[in-house]
Amino acid sequence: MSYAVETTNLSKRYGRTWALQDCSLALPTRRVAALVGPNGAGKTTFLHLAAGWLPPTSGRVQVFNQNPSTQLKAVLPRIGFVAQDHPLYRSFTVEDLLTFGRRLNPRWDDRLARARMQMLGVPLKRRAGQLSGGQQAQVALMLALAKRPDLLLLDEPLASLDPLARREFLRTLLDATVESGLTVLLSSHNISDLERVCDYLIILSASYVQLEGDIQEIQRTHKRLIGPHQESEAIASVHTVIETSQTARQTTLLVRTNGPLFAPSWEVQEVSLEDIVLAYLSQQAAEHLSSAPSPRTHNGMEVVQ
Amino acid sequence: MIWVTWRQNRAEGFVALGVLLLSSLFLLVTGLQMAHDFQQSGLSDCLAHHTQSAICATLAKAFMNQYSPFLPFASALVFLPILLGVIVGAPLVAREFEQRTHQLVWLQSITRMRWLSVKVVVVLGTSLLAALALMVLLIWWYSPFSQLIGSFNQVTFDFAGPVLIASTAMALALGIFAGTLTRRTVFAIFLTIVLIVVIRIGVEFNLRPNYEPPIIVTWPLVQGDNPATVGTQPPPIILKTQDWNLGQGFMDAQGNKTGVFRCTGPQTQTLAQCIQTNGYRNYLSYQPANRFWTFQWIETSIYLAFTLVAVGTTFLLMKRRPT
Image (cartoon, rainbow over all chains, first blue to last red; front, top):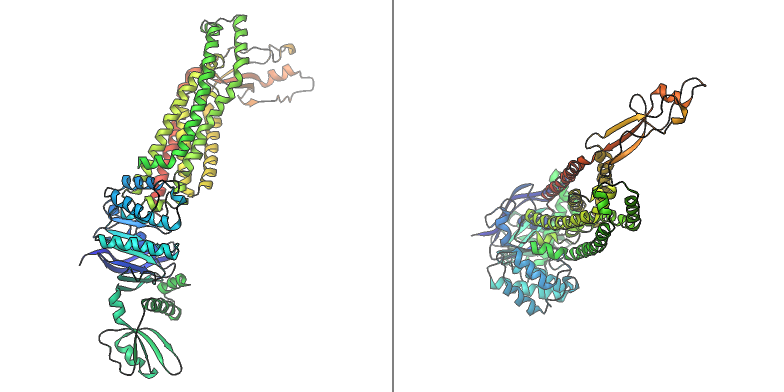
């Protein structure tokens, strides 16, 4: 299998704070992946490392088997990047921005860019600063897509958009991925918006990777079990318990199954993707609060708090 | 990237071009009139033949009376480079960070070092061409004055040669450097002004008169001990128009410049005797006209050195702080 982004123990430190630690993951090509985590989890840092924007403190990142921080010239034309709040030159007209893209990118697809702008009804003569937030996001996405990248990175693309603009933005994105062999990695602190478009999930929390994998696979292997207190030990010895909550009469477990689940005295429920993500994120926080203050967890806690 | 640089800075470009055109228009109109008068009145001939006649002096006086009010305008043009550094240089990089558009442009298919190089080269290049045009025009405009009052003085030196071009380059480079360092346009503008003022005051007032040791001429303050002759002795030389007079005053026997006479002798001592016993004399300090171009090139090199350091540091800063 070939990978669009592959990292090995990738770490980045700013001053004394670790923004990302020992991150090892492999994102297969042609996937639409969600990079999910709370604010400050290292999502932006990860995307910047992948785009060659930052050199790693330690570890390795590879984009299509090339190191973006040393082979930037080769990697840059293959990456599309939509930064947080989709910055544009506000005094440029949309037409100017098309010229900007055409002049700075060898693989630029002018027809595609114009067709998209026409389809979305964005006037070419208008200055970027006078467009609505949704239109600005669309123009930023168009600039990234018309570059004909193999990998598209989006940093919190939906955060500043209203629900309607979100839907339209995701539709444009979905169209683009269907048409080409594009790999997409988009970060968000909220998974619910992304369930429709993403088929791959990376959970990043407190500068560590918590979970990575195909979304269907993740949903298949994660179950909620409701049953008697005394048997939870037995479950935990076979499967991985992510979250436990107890009432006086019963225990509720969220588990990742390691093999077939045989638990006749337990009620087995499907879990929504959002609940799985939340379970991992709260597990992370709980672990840090209870563990001994080793340097790593200490740093992690700072980020969580 | 050249197109992008142009598109980003065209507003400032138009303003700068407008200012340049207006200044040029003014210089052309007044300059042609001055040149015409200078020829027609016969002043030009007078000066060419070194005639020390009363008519020549009258003509010179009339010319100066009519046209010297324009002189402050020429010296005001010397502030244009500073303006360029502030308006074009400081925001060049700072504005990208401020509006976060560096996140857009750095992820196109060109490296940020190339992005910075093109920006710097395009802006510096066009500004230097503009400065060159202004310099040529100013030298032509000033030429009648040059023959009357000389070009080798604190004010005219700024625009009468390549120093004007080098100081423009320096102002721009300092602006770009300040913008890269602070990443905030307002701070960058402030820092640019401070840097330019500090460097130029330091160079113009402390270094410029001393690129080569000034020639100091001394002569007696008094003839014998005749009190009537104190301070009436004429200097042994008369400075030419093109020499740079650095000032005159008194000097003691050890060669220290002084403003007062310290007479420590008996009460009966006369001023003339005091001057005699302490060895006080007149001095005149000046830079001869033939050093003008040496001085121009020395100062040009100084400003270009600052330019290189500022540009080099800008690139280093950009490499060191990647986000």
